[in-house]
Image (spheres, rainbow, N blue to C red):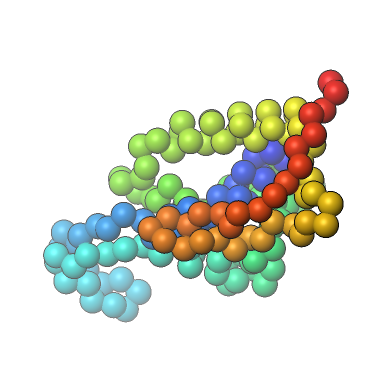
Amino acid sequence: MYTEAVILETLRISSILPTALPHTATEDIKFHGYDIPKGTMVLANLSANHHDPEIWGQDVEEFRPERFLSPDESTVVRHEALIPFSIGRRICPGETLARDTLFLFTANLALNFEVTVGNGEKKPPLESQEGITFAPVSSRVVMKERNL
């Protein structure tokens, strides 16, 4: 359960794709007071959504998996504003495979290794290198095999 909360928080804070793929309005529409004419290209800003303090709280830039747990921390709580794979009919077709792979990778990593920062190293930053996708900033960690 906590592993899933860690993955959800990672998907929120990392926003690998800053925007969803472009879409085109198929008809004239009014959205939140804005007129969007037919044929207009529309991009959803996923990164802004995942870092909005009005949605996630003032600690939005802190890595806090507990935001995806119930108050008694007994269940995972999904938040409708978490949309790392986009939303609607054009959602990423690989979402299920990606979520399953993330869970297996993360759980096996935590089970088999103790991950720490090296001597004299700082904690890896939460910032990313911006481009078409966001990539993590290079950092060093120590992975020590657990004796199970």
